[in-house]
Image 1: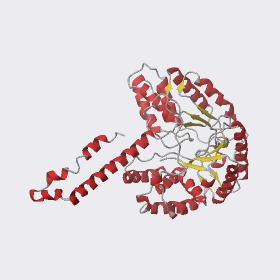
Image 2: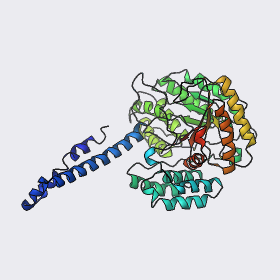
Image 3: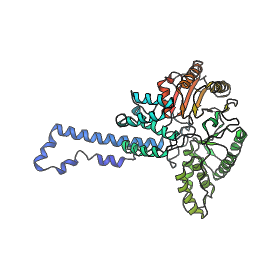
Image 4: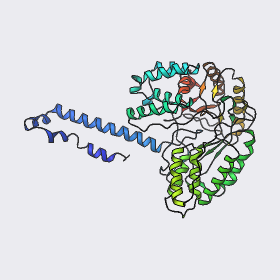
Length: 451
């Protein structure tokens, strides 16, 4: 707290301020109990509003760094690092949006989710837009559903239009547009178990060897995921080695996903100062490489200009990152790789609809391998530490058909009945609304991505 402490100090004087403007014959009004109570109510309401704004700002700045694939939630790059010894694991996530923003009963949410699942996106959009007049006054979920609808449809202008209204209405920073579908045809996008590497708290030159180990699956067309959420320091040698490793992976045409990247950005930013060359070019170029992989073109261009001024050289040009490298066989679902390290995920395809028997079989294969290769994890709220988690990564899942959702639900219930912990992470809010309606909570934990 403290971002708005100066406003609170000003607010402390609110009850007394009107007295300086009263005429002499009205002075007695402030002595009445009713007037004093009214003034106290005004002061409390003003303080509560400031607290709400401050809480929203604090959440934006210091929210936990989720380990989801390409999460759109982006804390500021210059956020302060954790204190030594602090817990580096992401905090627990809620299985629904913020309780204060979740409608207790909203038929329009359920109806639009069903329409969208059945391929009627235009009708779903119209229902949600109409609901903003009433439901959208106090509930954020219909806004979030529209944001996700526009992102999976690639409609940036429509997204930006309602983002301005959202920011004005809720007095918060507007969400950023992120392209949520692969740049290849959905039927060619990879689905299945993909390699994951979680970097440690202190990066050194040894990171080069770690990245080299990710080159093995490149030929299979799998995306690779690098998790920087635990990073708290990086030597200059580590910056150079990581830069070379990332450039090498990208040069092969590999699809690279970054998780927890803002933790590494927070480490790099303090190393950079315009006009200061003592630290060399590696931290600057690594920052530019990360911003490029994160598809933050505006931040990239601003940083590139600072780099140009500092070293008096031409900066690298921005290139949109690759998304959705086709698998070796278009449309194939990979379930043949063992998950390996704990935390590995099964990446769902952009569209799950029609006959999903091959997908269900692949999930069964992933679950069987996870049971033998992953470290068992405790299930929240229980003393059971014998079940390995089954994590379905939904960051690229744009839509799931109603029938397919029922079929998937049945398979996940069977896995949960065997004592397995099932999680669906990085859901968009259109899909999350459908899964809540279908009672997925009886067998799995749902994690919608954050705005």
